[in-house]
Image 1: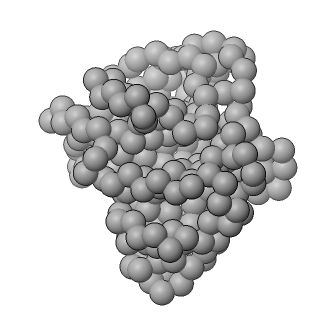
Image 2: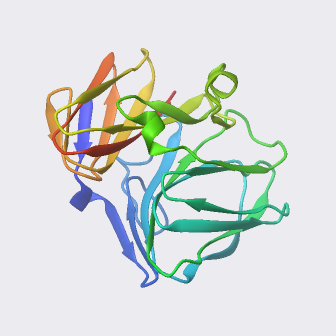
Length: 235
């Protein structure tokens, strides 16, 4: 099955400093038909104004992946970690038994990002944080694993580790070209084009639409425009 969730149908919250779109039920947005997809629980499309951000707040028992689309985000947490993650790069926080963190846009321009939450395979464990650069040139014409809890992905591909049987991957595709991803039986894929119009297994989608897939075998993505893709594969 393929379900294309148009950008304009997503949950929306405008807080002034934060303009957020919610692919799944989150905060004051609730849709019983959009509670998650597999173990993917949250996909927020956030625009954060310059010199603003999320003040310190707690999390537990969640794998939180931040994919920065433009600008940069600066992280600080109760474990003593801090770091700046710039456009195209990724940070991962395993909340475990509990962590408090802040995420601020300390730049003089707006920052846009995808914030992705995946439910862990089991609760508990020590919290952790990590970040890594993923040059877009390295994922031209192919999916590259950014974060994963699937055996072999971290060791073989240098992905950031998460505590879930899930994979976060990304690709860039030039207009007129295509890229494919093999989805195993029983797994769920959720695909978003950060930019560019695309065609997924013959169905058209616009930038930032959400595309939920299951039981499709190979996912074939054709780029109508130059496109930047982010995909989550989970149980």
